[in-house]
Image 1 (cartoon, one colour):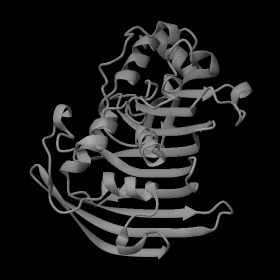
Image 2: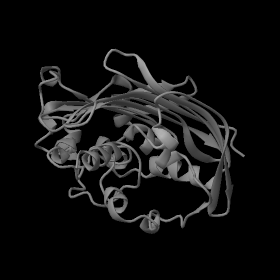
Image 3: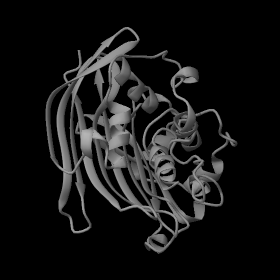
Length: 312
């Protein structure tokens, strides 16, 4: 049972499609009324920038989802660095590798070019010891030849059982702020609903991304009085999304999610950066630092990063 719970929670935070049309409220004035604006955004509102429309675009955005979808249709290389630690910070197991994905039509294959495995990263016969590594490979490693029909309706049509159920959940990466169908904590992820809004500060600022892309940055941050680790009323502690001003494309997103109760105890930080390849947005870098502690299971403490490059 604990394995199923772990999979449901971590995949709700990790990767799959989202149902972006399921918003119960298409008006965001209750949010825009309390959003703090910096001086540059205030000036922009005088020239026609609409905060209510901006929040609607952010909540209904599909560009971030599409960038990850593009990974399944392109040829590229990616590097992975995964380290699992014990409570004292000592590395228990690690996996480093360089991989080549080949895409042809609606199908893809993968070749491992380099690999270095240390410690007890795997059990015998390469069976996974850690759920973190297992799920990472599930989403980014291709075994054999895999073919897809690239529409949201049947993106995961070949999956069944628990995987199909999990992939129907709201995913915080692609629709942050939606209610996640996770027992006991789902409603706490709905950070734009009236019940959760008193816990957060919301702001829009104007920033330069990497010095060459001007962005609007939407930030949701837990109020200081609710930052105690014993506070179990929230899950999302920090969420920041960079929108390129010219296109309103999401090009970066940072998260911190944490919760502690008798059932769940986790603290996860993620950072995702996108780039443009042949006029398509794709992930460039994913960074993860997370700790999970579920009853009857040893805690998992891991860090990993993925870098995607050499697109053809």
